Structure formats: C-alpha cells, structure tokens
Length: 382
Length: 110
Image (cartoon, chains in turn green, blue):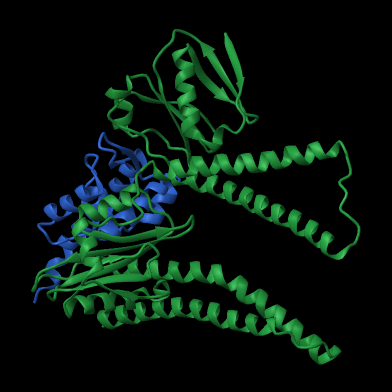
C-alpha cells in the first residue's frame, strides 16, 4: 500500500523535511521516493524510528563511507543531485553522521538571492512608479478593479514566502556545522580595550594580503600585540606589550566548511578573523613561534599559495571587470554624443571615471600581489 | 571521475598527495593525517594544514576519498575504492622507479 503526500517547497528547508520524514516513519509511512512535482511516495508498514538525511551532491557518491554503512546508514532514494539516506538505529546510538555538501547551501543561497532581488526591485519599482505618477500628473491614481490582481497577489506572496523561508532555512543550514563568525574576547580583554589598546584602520587589504601579514608581523616584532580584529576586518586593536614572533596568514577560500576551521585550529593556528559571503571567505590565522624555530606556514608548498593568489586575482577580476566595462562604455558614448551632437557635459561621467580608476586599481593590485609571490618563489628557486 | 581519468590526472603524484593518501590506511581526521605523515617520514615532512585541506577537498570532489562526521561532529576522511586503485597504481609506478634506480645506481659511482 502506498500513500502520496504533496509537499511544496520541501527543498527550501531540508532539515524540516527530514524531521517530517521521521515523523511519517513513526506513523508507519516509509519514504519510497519523491517526484519532480514535490509528491512524496510512502509505503505502509510498522511504525518505526528512522533518522533521515537529505543531501544535494554534484556527483552522487559511489558508496557511503564504510564507517557509515557499519553504523546502519543506507541510501533510500536518489534523483539527480538529490540523495536521501536513512538510519534505523535509535538517534542516540548513531555514531556517524553524513556531512552536508556545501552545494546545498550554494543552491538555496542562489535561489534566495534571485527571489530577494525580485522582491526588492519590484517593491521599489512599484512605489517609485506610483510616486512619479503622483508627482507629475494632476490626475489622481486610480486602481482598476480586475480579476488579474489575484494573479499578481499570488505571485508576490510566492516571491516573499520563498525569500523569507529560504532566508530562515539558510541561516540554520549555515550554522549546522558551527562556524563562529566573530571572535569573542574575554572580559579582561574588553577592559584593556577601553584603556591601553589602540586602534588602527586597514582598508582594502584583500587586494594585497601579503602586505597586511608583513605589517602585523612587524608590529608584533616592535611589541605591539594584536588583540583582535573588528568584525569587518578593517579595525585592528593593538596593545603595547613585549616583542613576539608571530606568523600571520591570510587565507582566501571560495567556500569553507567546518573541517576547514577544525584542521587549522587542530594544527595550532588561532583564528583571528573570518568573514565571507556566498562566493568568498577570508580568514586570518596567527601562530606564535619561538626564536630559532622555523616560521610556521599554512601552506607547505609554494604552488598552493600561488594557486590561491591566482584565485584571488581571478575572483576580483570577475567581480569588478563588468563594472569597469559598463562604465567605460557609458563614458565613451557620452564623449561621442558631446563631440558629435553637442550634448551638454554631464557631471555623473566624472563619477563613472573615478569608479573605473578605483575598480581598475583593485584588479591591478590583486594581480600585482600574484606577481610579487611568483617573483619571490622564483628567487627562492634559483 | 572515472578511474582512467583519475589516474591520468593524479599520476605521477606529488609527495604531498602521495603521503596524504597513503596515510588513509584507516579513516582519519585532517590533523591526524598531518601527524601520521610526520611520523612515517620521521619528521621530514611537515604538511601545512592549508595544503592538506586543499588536497583533501580536491580528492573528495574527484571521488578518491569520502567524508563523514564522527560523534564529535568532526570530519573524518576515508579512502574510496577508486582511491585504493589509484594509490595501487602509484605504488606500482614507484616500484618500477625503485627497481630501475637500484639497477643502474652503480653506473654513476666512480
């Protein structure tokens, strides 16, 4: 006997769906499969306690890790990138857990941004157009009664519902492997912050991270110990103490999970700062070392560092080049119309020009950083 | 990735990749791999945690290793069947290298 249940938007909050599947199993309905149209198909049996896990994977695994198989985990169903696993053991006896692929966070994150974009732009357009109407026409705005309004209403409800639901679920998903975003400091540190600590501002170090590392290491060498870094990564709080040998490593990742933070802290690195969006994450790590000891490094091979520098340069080029390009075209068109049609010069072109210089210099700085690293390694190799 | 593709992409292996994979005789944590490699190379190789994380992430993407979380919610890395075949192919290559090195070594002594 089978039972079919319609569960729209189930993929927005997979954790909620997992719990729902468990509650269905407790009533004797086991998941068999789900369809593209969000219908979940169950088979009826004895009520059982089953733990479910839903994942979204680029390449579905060839097999579960043997440690998980031995722990009672099995694959229930897979379609496309979606995979469902289950475990019949009582929850507190399960020793292993599947790791959720970052892809799910990326997928739902992307969907959320699209809905968010829609919601905001439509909202703004709607009010701006009404405002302009009120401002420039003497006629009052009249709203035509029409059955089509219900379509509009349903559409907007859908957009806003999706956005809010995804926002909440993504926040939960992002926290699942706990990534502490802000460095918490002790009450003593808080006290010193008000007294002896002083603040220095460093802007835009992401485009030349090696310079930031060098500056921090020099400050430590002079006895200015770094206490903490502000949440945005621009404020650096120092306190006058003893000269120390501390290695600072900035690190850029496109995506970082729990294991990223674990492996570095296990290896003895202290996390001072981490901040990221859905396509990039910057972290700053530090480690004190004794005199005569080899300088610790996050990367033991130069090619890793070089690769990371290239990734930084590519990411920022990809991010800023379209802006430079669009502003460039706008300026070119404007100059063309000024020269050929005698159009008046617009002040906004000056702002466009400044933007080109700023964004262009950021791209260049990132590539210069890559070249500096390359030259340094070439020198070492010879 | 298919086995052929994996072998083409990974062989010959860097010392780093080889030792990371070789240390997966049993499932280990990331830092466990670093410690194990230092031990079996008698402290000659100290892998950077960034290097290990990067290599493991790439190997996971290519289906050479697979991951799960233990009861402490820490990531554990386990070698897959593809991974086992890959390291076997590399060990065969190294065996040939070693045999030829022994065979011709004498010729270079004056």
